[in-house]
Image 1 (tube, rainbow, N blue to C red):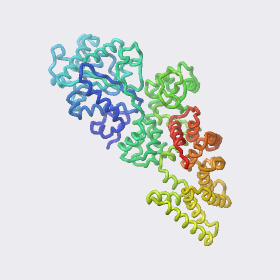
Image 2: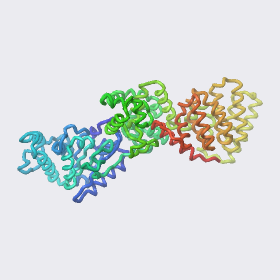
Image 3: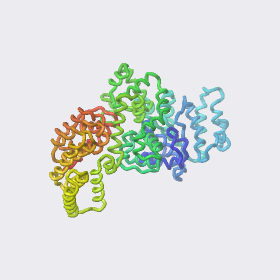
Image 4: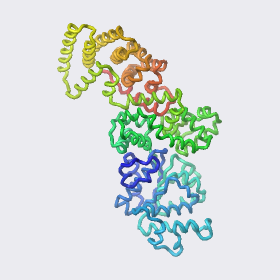
Amino acid sequence: MRRPPKYNPGFLDDGEIDELFCARHRELDILVNTLEKNRGEINQHIVIIGPRGGGKTMLLRRLAAKIRGTPGLEAAWHPIVFMEENYEILSLSDFWKESLYYANSTTATTGRRLEQLKREVPVSSEAKNATYEALKKPPGGARNPYSEDIARARLLEFAEKRGKRLLLICENMNDLFSVLSEQDCWKLRNILQTEKRIMLIGSATARFDQIDHHKKAFYDFFKILNLEHLTTKECAELWFSVSGKRIHEQQAEALRILTGGLPRLVSILAWFGKGLSFLELMRDLEELIDDHTDNFKGTLEALPPRERKVFISLARLWANSPVGLIAVEAGMGQPETSAILNRLIKRGIVEEYEEEGQQRPIKRGKTYQLTERLFNIFYLMRRGGAEAFLVYDVVNFLIQVFGTDAKDALLELCDRAAQVRSERERRNEQTHISEIETKNRIDTLRTELEENRKKLGPEHPDILLNMSELAGYLYDQGRYEEAEKLLRETLEFRRNTLKPENHLVLNSLRNLFSLHCRNKTESALSELQELIKHPVYVREAIMSLTHSCIELAFASPDIARTVAEAIEGSLSKDLLYPLYAGIRLYLGDKMRLPREVRETAKIIREKIKEQKHD
């Protein structure tokens, strides 16, 4: 399969579009159902609203391909697909001329030129010489008042010849309507209301005046179809479609958070990581950013200087931010900053969100953030300093908590005793060991432990291994006091023979911490405070610590608050920032967070709520 175009899905043929299209089936069904209902005297016209990279172009191209590939639709409709940027259109006359140009470019036989229309379609004497090229230079010059009517008549004759209705597919409708005069807009509305042979489906990156202002021509005229960000399942399907590899649900969740659920970014990541595992891709984030530097820089350089200043100020803030804070960061007045933000929204590179991440239509309480999340990460990583380190820490958190299977992570992060315990858990799941068999195994392990103590001595490393495995079985049986005694013996031995920061000592402390999270919260809090003094260790044990802290936070709001405060005041705060934020959200605190952190924190908040103690 060829590499999916990042910005020009129009380069794909219908078969390639069908192969890659996997994330907007609900929206496609809505469009097709609308086409099927538009059989009367009045058509329902549609505008699709979605951010840059949200899949608008792919959806519209897939609709055109589906029409051409479905007999019932193909017999009734002829899709006319405009290019994404309609630079040649400045008037309604231009609009009909471009419609005529693309009418023949989107027939089943590609590559044919519009000059062939003159030979293919019988025309009236009035429009006999009104080919596309002729209409560009009408008699009397460009202001010929009849050129618009002739072009439209020529287009309708094209429809009559084929016995079909015309579906005009026009992107960036906000830009199109901004260059048309008010008179042209009202005239177009009248034609669309009365001419059953023409239906218009457009797209825009955000809502715009012509559809929102009650005095404008297209107010309350179009059906609005909003494109939501991809779900976790849709991210996984798109990843498989592009890379040919399956990822599990947790990895797809990390992908959704990192990309904001934008199809373009998911596709870029999937193709870039086609030959890599998911973990290798996440760990090669720097290479990915470097690979797309030209695109990021091109977007920045295309902005006027003051718009660029506001844009990078928002990127530097990272979290969704109110206009007042952005104005301070940019060193501009609030009114000017607000006006610039509105222009950036229309460009589709900034979006308006409230703190919890839901679009909010009212002015008061608005916050803003960059639409493309990789762009934000690119800027912070290029800028360097503390902000870049926080980006690395958040990505590392995503990798460990969502990007790998829990059992694999245990094998990576724990010592040999934990490995044995993980293997024992895997055996239990695979062979469904009964409770009686488990008790028998405990008796066997006790016997082995006593024999090894006599044979090898009480401080031999294999003794610690026996103790850890036995403690795991006792824990699973709910015999916490017996398990605690064994874990304490292991910890004390390692403390007496190794340095406090040694990973084996900290592993033993973490095992005891995990046990106490369930039945001795005060001891667990003390052990947590000791563990988070060691950020080097925490960086590698994030997943295990996160799961234990989630269980501990469920004990009571006061305990949860203490956990959050301990993390906040520790050297490991940045490493555990999404966990800290999730506990704060669980407690009902208001926080202004980067989307990546916010989405992760919401998941952690829900995990705390779901905890059930035996």
